[in-house]
Length: 173
Image (cartoon, rainbow, N blue to C red; front, side):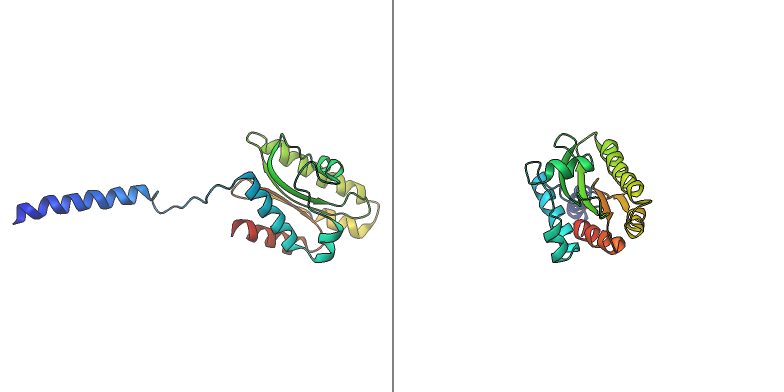
């Protein structure tokens, strides 16, 4: 009887170990999203973090053929060639320090996109350093960070910590 159970137990052990190996050791990798899904998630996260008045006044640009895209996108260095997905809302008028963006750089473009976003922040800080002190404070407090999936977030607005937290939570879950 013992000889019958030994092969059965050995087979069960092998099957259980194979099952554990397939699970990746308990680590889960978030499912990869398409560029269209990322763009929609970025837009939803940004609009969800803002009030209706701001959503109406400063639209979120998600494609290079949208109205104002030819003015807004170059401000942060976003092109179709250096990004996979993006949602960008920037005040094109130099009377308000405002920029909120979520950008997925194209492969190999991470440093270039991050550099462009940081250059935008520095330009805004410089522009408002002697002009509109309240807007300089907003520009000075701007946040730029990279999420675990590679998304670059820019938040330059009033109450930027709350807006950044809201967008990050919406995107990372």
